[in-house]
Image 1: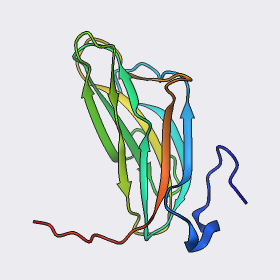
Image 2: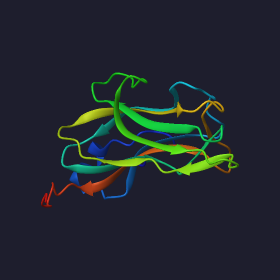
Image 3: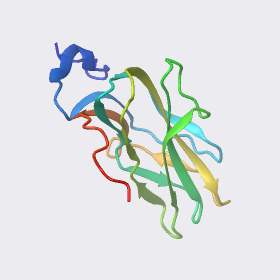
Length: 167
């Protein structure tokens, strides 16, 4: 049975036949995040089942971060694997930052990371934003119907393991 819109797909329901490129969880908002000088939550995904032996991409749509010229804005994806809710003090899965250029109201920012779980767990995720440095203004992620803020978990298929050589 196909998953309902906004519902979390259970990779176990597909057995080992799940095809790569399956979105197992997603959420979005179409409004700006709260303007802040400290780290605040923007979007959250709870209890996303991920399986060992699979490769997942966890990330966002290209974000439009904004506010004061020359301010440094940071975006984090934080996570837990113990069925607790991810918070601004949870472990960082991915961190990305950018500096707002003078005369530019916003900067595009891509935030995403590969995740290779070593065991079957429920992943809880929190997308956050913060002003890291500067004094010109409060940091935020712009959102709207034409620029939704999205957080996704995509099952990209079987993880072959680390097949490279470290030099």
